[in-house]
Length: 170
Ligand SMILES: Cc1cc2nc3c(=O)[nH]c(=O)nc-3n(C[C@H](O)[C@H](O)[C@H](O)COP(=O)(O)O)c2cc1C
Image 1 (tube, rainbow, N blue to C red):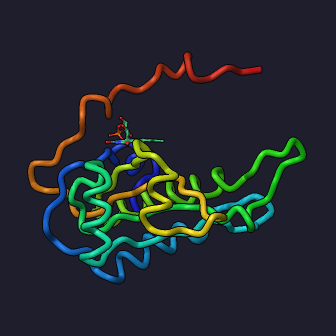
Image 2 (cartoon, protein in one colour; image 1 turned 45 degrees about the vertical axis):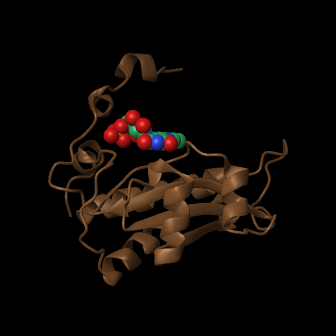
């Protein structure tokens, strides 16, 4: 296992993918990473739709250019019938699904598989496109695949906030 900070620092958003298929056992590991994260009250409302069939890939590719022709696109949602609520009414579903997505993104990178977090779409349109039930709320798309040979990080990747602007000790 590599050093976590090295893994997290080297990961970058991949927007060019090779044709190489993702092996089933690697996909299973990525999905497992989404299964084992923390969720509020352990309610586990995260739901992952694996967009992999020719038909489903055609659908997502015509819906958004941000699928980047990746061989698989994960559509991460949460089930609002299952997610918990805080005392102020806040629904924890998006928090939980976000953690699951982050874990899958990092596990993928650890396996040599790239991804890019995508939220630049109309979530209601996406939910309609895949005929999701009303209680299923879309949180992110995660195209995944082996980076193409000419894939490289965008300049934004290395633009990190200054630690002193990020951290306040109280
Ligand atoms: C919530 C969220 C939404 C994002 N939406 C998109 C998107 O719609 N399209 C895209 O190409 N990248 C998207 N990104 C990727 C960011 O642009 C990228 O993470 C950021 O520029 C830093 O680059 P890096 O991931 O290479 O470090 C999104 C990232 C996050 C966390």
